[in-house]
Image (cartoon, rainbow, N blue to C red; front, side, top):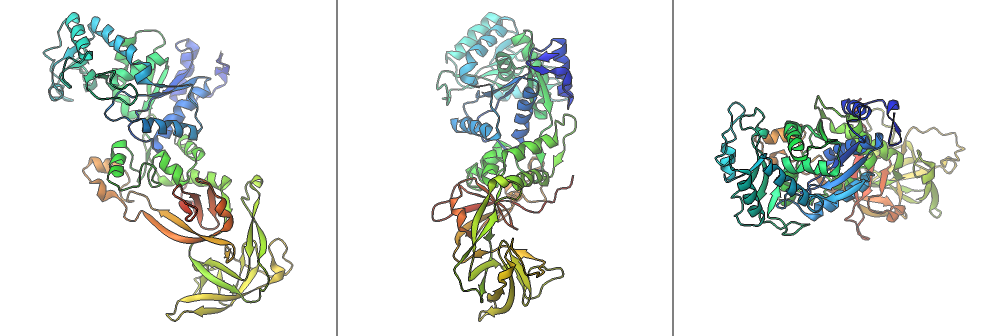
Length: 563
């Protein structure tokens, strides 16, 4: 069976959703697969959202369908254009291109208002004068039914008149609501006459003061899906208890063929990662972090600035899978595995010395000699760059030891080591300062041992990186720890248990140090990614200036994740 150019019979379903889609298409219950991304522009996206967007876009693509991007902007109190703009940039970075982009406030609110009037006329909605506190008090509990509003049995004519007057601004904010007329004794509390519209005089970032009544999520979301032609409304398990409300509104508000289905997948929970716009906004507003794009933040703008790649994030969420039944907490090292794996393929190699120790090559008296360093052994297309070897070089302080531990294959007094891309050197003498610290090393080099043209026959176990005195500039290195302490494996759970967010924060999660970097790094652009040989992966930060290049530590070279 061919649907939109895709042979449905050839598709091997990877989860129960895809099994259902295949059945629907073959039975004619769906004409095509249409999904949507409906973010509320009230904050920045974080890592967990990548799972939602990957599922929506990849599912539609697999079946030859399409995905809408819709700003679900029905709450003017929280929403800002800044956040909406950031979502567009994030989607472009992730490589997802929506079929169409709309603002719900502009595209659908008039039609949704008309649907609400239709429901009033049909006796499925009524205007209620109870306050928010009174509505909550009458809702009941999981074991006790709710109490019907005294305004529940108004006639459709009276309700329609009041609702139109609400829209005209005749009543104070919060004085009236439009509620669905469902069942105040329903075992699912969400079905106990949910609110459809509230009065709130608040200027909206897109439609200004056009509306003083605003549709609420349980009503507006399914209606937007219907108007958009969505066939599968895919969301995380947090909305599972609302599915029955979604289906009620689809039936009573839409009531047409090819109505959308809500289906849920497990939320992406990562160890020691704090998510939730409310909590992240608090840290931003209190100055705990530098902004939404702080490299310690799990926001997409944050991890992107840190040096994570879009491919790594998508590969990670695909490895986690749909997970509709069991929700597990994934170790952060699993994400790092995919980040490290991608960077290994694309990052340019560079020699950067983080803790410099001066080395004088006593028998080298010529001009600095150029050497070639391979930019990435995994990708020939990245070519090489020129480094230099000379009279004075700098190595990592940890690459020399007066009292070496067992199996130490770096430089010791009287021992030899190879300088990467250059020559084997031997340490002949250690020069100390008056306070007993090492000032510098005096070494000799062996001209016949040049890398790629070694005719000496000398054996050397260790190779270390270096920079030449005439081929480095000082840079700033920002290094990070996880923002949340390791003992708080599930930060959201800890917050729910009453732990103060400040108690969970790792002290000194950001530190800075100076380092010596090869001069060719002066050509780096913001977000360019590098492997500092033998140290880890880094990227150039946006705070860099011509006088101060700042590199963010992305991830170490060592992989601790076990499949």
